[in-house]
Image (cartoon, rainbow, N blue to C red; front, side, top):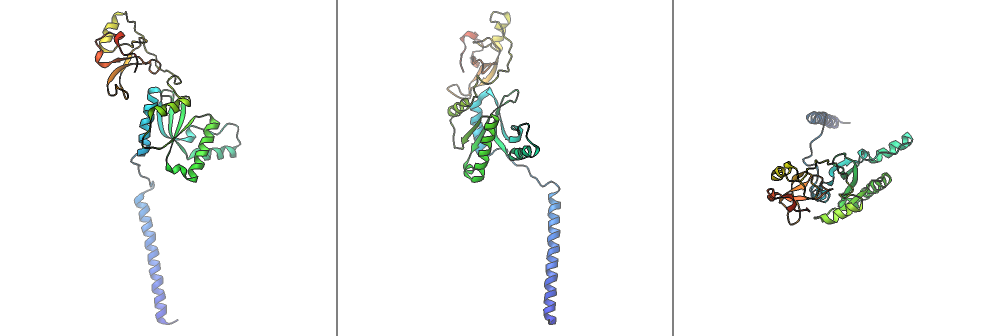
Length: 251
């Protein structure tokens, strides 16, 4: 090997070594800048499509129940008792990293009523189909109603409400947790109460101020029965000085 060739080889080795050292230093510097916990906050919990659907879902459910989003499946379902340790772990692993898009629960006790999945175009992929099949099978085995809704630009509240009712969710199926104090219409306090907070014209229970969200009275305030949805009696807010038997009797 000539002297010139040797010098060239040594120069190349030096350049490679310097580059390697520089790469290591840059890598360490990047890790130091990121810190021990390389995380960042997501700006929004729900996508625009999910947020839009949740609004319609709330209208469909009304005051009957509470809606939660992105709930881990393993916090709702659990492997059955009596499984061997290995089988239990495999069953748990299948659901531990998955979540339900929405969960409809009792607003007081948090009892789970229905799981809801919003299916967008990604659900046509093979991996998503396997996930959907797993969720469907798990929910069926656990006797948890699962509602699948295809993502769209708009949703019909009435149609969604009908589908929920078919799965067992309706005003009649949700426990009534309200224990209102009944007020006798003939009691001296009744006339005074009617001037400020009227009683329900249908059952005599106390009322609470609400705002209609749909129908011809949308946006208007009214005094609705505190036992809703058990009782749907209501009094228009602009008729507080009138007797309760002149009130509107249906929302």
